Image (cartoon, rainbow, N blue to C red; front, side):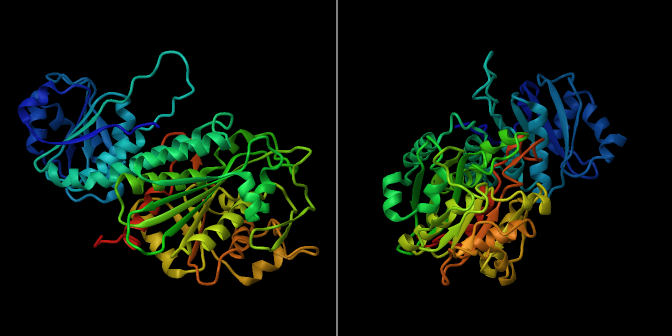
Length: 492
């Protein structure tokens, strides 16, 4: 797994600043008042820092922006950077500052010289998240590993304590990004399951259900998706038991390791992006890593369906009728609407086996959600206002975009089938909504449920503020916070 850069919080010693190598950054608030550490850097650089702070360029900076001074005289560092950040910065600005520093430093060591600023742990988290680089399949000279990040302040203990949970989140995000970025000839269903079994090292209970077991359970919808592939379909159940005797909270992830569309073949252009169609399962894995890494005081079960959707003489066809584990029958109209077939069976299974206190499914489910929300927000569908509200609050706190979408009986009419209990698609109008309506049919009346359509946020070309081009790891931090805020056993 790609490892986030090590972060160290230490007490500022101004006598050592001249010898710091790599990139050294001084945090300066609006108004330009220099902290003791910044004043020392200014003297060492023969007034260069003060001139920068008094320049029009500094005035034009927004909070969280940086200004590079290049090769400063009087310092061993290769770059001196001014960071505009108030003493009580908003979390978004603090993380943006860290991300900007990460982009500038590359693999060089980064030292941040702070004054009495709060949210220094967020600066470090932003730098750690943006420092991700997926290089597993690049040949030639091995790129150097990124050097560590050091944050110097008068009182480092508070920031260090806050960063402990953030470090666990960063690891979970990196695991998700690695899985989503991995090509499908490497991340087969078998390899995916093997990597999830690695969570046992952190104390997660992992169980892999093979095709014979899935057939006995009646997961005919899930098995139908994978029956055209040579890769065996699998279901992986992961349990973190950090709470008391209470029922667990459930995460359900779509894990289509590659999606050709099946017989309803996708256009060739852009099909290479379908390596990321297991993003829901990847996010669930990242959350479980985070929970285990920080020893969360909660019981959480994650279940993921791992399949490959390929065209073959044995593949499911438009017009086929398949019975789900629940017993409802589904007429296949489009074999490219396969994710909901994977999810419906494992959603039913996890409710029957674990009786969860709540259930969240995650899936790169529909292109329609990208048309509606772009790449800024995931679509949020729920039968429970409290669960949805708590998640939206958590997502906002973690700066992960999410937007509530409607559900309603009127949309169910689009799923009516002439020959079965339902169709697997409802046509183009409201495509992401009818997909959610399909899934809701497999939610028991007493189960609080939320569906997250992450098709637009799981992988973003050109990257985001906190991630480079490709996988983002969206949802790991928001779901970790949701579980911390609503499921943690604070007395355990």
